[in-house]
Amino acid sequence: MLIINMFNANPNFNMKTKTIGIIGGMGPEGTADLYMKIVRYCQKNFGAKYDNDFPPIIIYSAPIPDVVESLENEKITLSMLSEAAKTLEDDGCDFLVIACNTVQFLLEDIRKSVKIPIIGIAEVNANYAKKEGYKKVGILGTEVTVNKVYDQELQEIGIKLVKPTNEDQKKLTQVIMAQLAGKATKKEKEKLKEVIKNLNTRGAEAILIACTDLPPVIKQEDVDIHLIDCTQIYADETAKISFKN
Image (cartoon, rainbow, N blue to C red; front, side, top):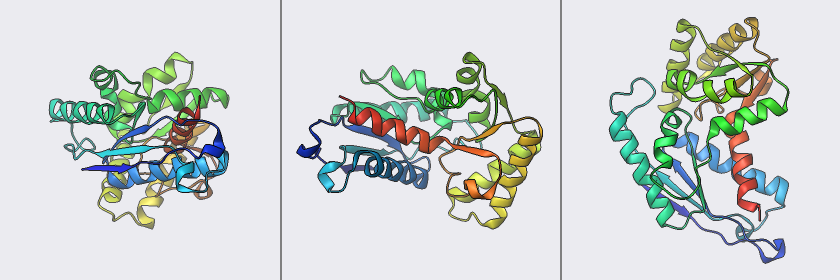
């Protein structure tokens, strides 16, 4: 499914915004969350008010095979994501973002399918963690995200990643699947709080919420340790790039 929202920059802004392409659908609510966070950033930081104050945004919602519980269809997933990227490039996008942490273990391969830049969520959040001065961070995400997406980016800048135990990872998977089905409740929030407490006990100074489906389930006010909403940091950077001359 291709969702298109095209706006032209307000002439009063005296700048031309870049067209954002979002590869989404993994899951749909996470995609909507990223989109709205881009919108909110534009309102707060660029004074966007009217429709033509916002950057052009094209969303390609790709119904890929499940990547939360298994990666049995990796080739099909890569093919679908590469096709989504090429479609967005052909439709005039200046750069792309991917509204999912998990599939970004395929980021380098997806990048090969297009000539325009694809911004990586792990790269953006690793830079943020470094600027904040963290030396040791915990992570909440799918098993693939935890083990294949953030490790290298953080290691290269000297930040240690504290991963959930096998038992806690199972809890995370259950919460993510519940949220994807629209059935996350207070019970799921309590599970996340338990995992976060365990990561904090093991030395994590902050927690990466590294799944686009988790921000609606857990909020900063629910815990004492600093939560890094990876979707928010990603959305902020996306908006900045769009407005950058």
